[in-house]
Length: 328
Image 1: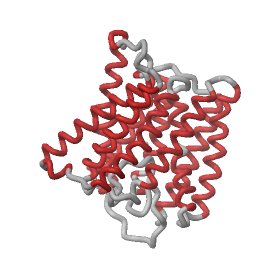
Image 2 (image 1 turned 90 degrees about the horizontal axis):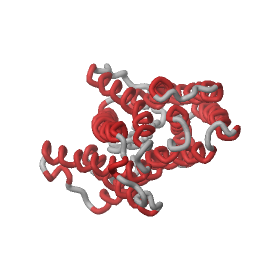
Image 3 (image 1 turned 135 degrees about the vertical axis):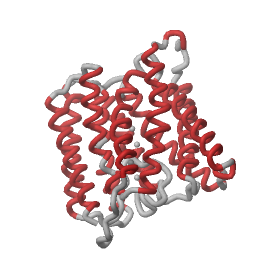
């Protein structure tokens, strides 16, 4: 899973240094359109494809690695690497934060990565990666609900998108209700989307580090430590042997660290400060398509009618929500 504008939240502007899963800013009077540069499109392509492929990477990783411990290793290593890069490029001063900023970054990291991403990792031990990605696509709808709860008025089309998205979510739950997949896996992903949405929403409302990449580093380290503690608490280390981890799981974990957490995460953080939020938010309905295709082609995951129908409804709902924001 997933990282808004100072006025709102996942997956996204001027100052939310973290990666919300979709950031949907409030409607504002029409403003002159900015020309989208090649660098922006390149960064978007990275977020589209790489983040879409992380669901496959997670599925391969948990084949022979415990879910929370592997997620913890991923984020701690990626966070430390990113912190080193930030210090190398901008000096140690770039990492300087006060207590409130550090606390906020840690809280958002726990909501996004422990409550959000690692729960998806856990769920992928029970459900197909493509289904997990389609369930995660509901995040923009939760963000609209949160905005309304805090007094904003997203608009009628956004509310319609929420209703449509929830109906698609109901269809996607059918494989669990029918016994085709484990229902608990579906419910865990839904819980993950709620945690990610809350983290994304509040990431733009809390005092965060001024450097978005430093903020991301602190978030990943905090989230990774949280994942590791939960993993040890669940006893995932008992009976686990590093020697029994397959080569493909090591490769998948390395891919998640380098490309999923460093390359794509950095591209996303840069986009939040560079591109229109409504454009950045489009990753929310591209990632699931990429994930479903990769899961079917690489892992031979079944693409059933509830996945096709429910996924199509959810993606359409997200398109409606995002298009509503782009009218502003």
